[in-house]
Image 1 (cartoon, rainbow, N blue to C red):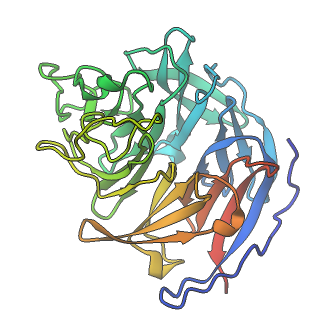
Image 2 (spheres, helix red, strand yellow):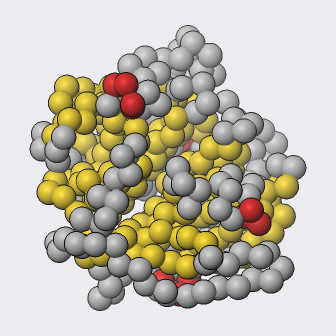
Image 3 (cartoon, rainbow, N blue to C red):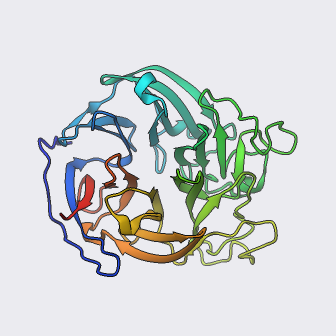
Length: 368
């Protein structure tokens, strides 16, 4: 990897959309990144980036990529396995605590684990596992691995179905194919749907997920949105509600990769329908709910990375429904792995290695 010594501003485009009044420019903060996966913002203006290969690095506000942090946990790195999401504790300013989701285990028995640790300079201290998916699999696929702190301070984690274990998504006692919800110490919130364990696993918050890799929060209302990969078609955006079942694999808008139907049902009673689905697949990755001041025309929109289309889908959310879609940032020409709203109201993208193009950290700013 190469260090980017200073902020390199690249006018990839000056896009004018008269109907939306959304003028922007793209600035490359850091280049030559190797499989960046997740991005978060440190209070001093630096960035903390996780890499699929099992590293966390600090990238300075000036674009310099540091060495891998020391004392990070070992990961099961194969195929889709590795490091996933990294987020800051809501009280990071006082406790310097971060959380990391990653693939843990062996080829014969692996799953998602969350650790919490104290970030001190270029090292992690007090590294403590707080949750590990109890149901293990022998596939290096469909982990989910997205983290989000809800308004109430609980932590949400998406888990995938392991590709070959799709039926687990409908088993309320199985933690695969779910969104799980936990307290910051790893304990079960008392108001989880199955907190007493009688009718389902105490950590399970929602079920019927295939490979959910996007979580976003509308902090003004507390609404949580998620997206997940369908098979061949049937990618979904959903509003997450406690106890909701989103259908996989008993309902789907997609088909198997062989072309055979997964199920004859697209909808059923008792299944929460998606707010939006895509057939053919866009392969959604990363998502943010935009509520910043920098782009007023985009306020109240979900911004969803699309790996297949190599762009970002802006979804207009109106009264709980998605009413419009437009494509943004296609001029980058790379797979967008993560997308975040920064403390400055700007939009930040992680573009992963695509063809002969290296991974990048990109800031979307106003054109003024």
